[in-house]
Image 1: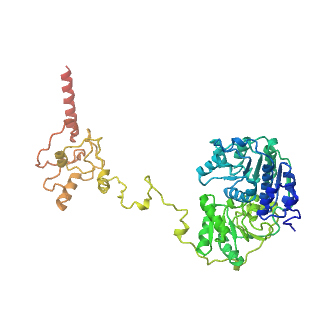
Image 2: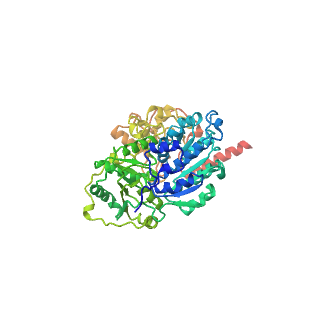
Image 3: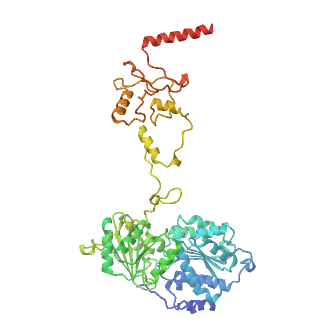
Length: 573
């Protein structure tokens, strides 16, 4: 059976009186097993890597060590802080998530109040200028930060790590992950050498890879493990359901109806699934909220406060909330998706059964989740399997309306000016132009007058000539060809006779009184004699080079060509 508290009191350890006042104000009296084992070593100034189960007091352990070191040791360079417009803190605590950095800062404020030491939390997602001014013009002794925002301030020369006396890395397995290790290495190179500072490393899981990096950067060769044979807390009742992916939702509603949890956490692997669960739970009357990395920081903090104050009884989250968060009275943890990393499973279920309490952890393993089960059970132990019965499924739960279900994912598509397409109702709709001339004219007429621009690349034909030639809108601006175009289908009737018949029968021609003439750019049929021209007013003469020649018989054409050639030859002579 796991022992929650030991028989060792904090007053029995070598802790200054100022720190003991803060410990009493926080309500601590007896040490936990990890505190009893680690504090005697860290109070002497040793570097240590401690592994302990979740919810066993690791945060208080390194805070007490840090405060003791700073109270007993005077500052190295007191005059260079706050007066020069730069911050030179004496201690640095690195955390992987914003929520964990905020929680450490709040717990440190209670312990450090009698000591007169100031803590400053540095993390992204909130007022950048406010944090910068606090570092530059306030007395900051300890900085609790996430790597990204801290590096940003260091590159602007707002903060320096030259005077660091104590370095703490919380949740070391995540901080030494591939995503954080470049930033952590960059920060460690700006800190004093390992023999001039104390390095502390804490986590619920410490792998061999993490210990190699700890030896390389922190000069820590061994790890102190509390209950190394049992990674998870034995007061957590674990169970596993094998269920199809399409049945997870109905089984989750059945488990919520059967268990009736007072306060529960539901973990998913993706933010999209967390949003879907939130909509389904709200549609069925549950007070639920979503906590993912995409949620703004102020809203994330407000959601956590509502969950801690029992205004929400269900919190759906990704692994953002699985690291180090201490929320009292969490009775149930549901793993809607099994995590891909086995260590994340240990941290997820560690949100319940905190400091001696009991809790229930239920995992739903679908077809895809079964691939991660072997590694999880190898690290955390065998999980009892429970086979769901028909009464465990709730199939008549309500579906959210399409509007609410797609409110997060379906955002309005915005145009170049910023307004959504649905809001632009007054703008004229443009039809796709077709190849025919009538469709082109209709599309141009449907546009506003400002959109119709004249084609400057082609010269405009005279008005009288265009009226006499009966040109359509599509051919009005075309330049007449110098050589006649052969007609592909000789059997097809002439366009002029077709236009005349339409004009005589329906009266739709723009000049019904004047018989239309054949367009100049269309040749006549060579197999039919040309129709006699109608008596019309003579149009204005155009240059001869633009007038196409009429089709003539083959013999006459050759005779004319010979005369032209002989004329030019005589002229040259």
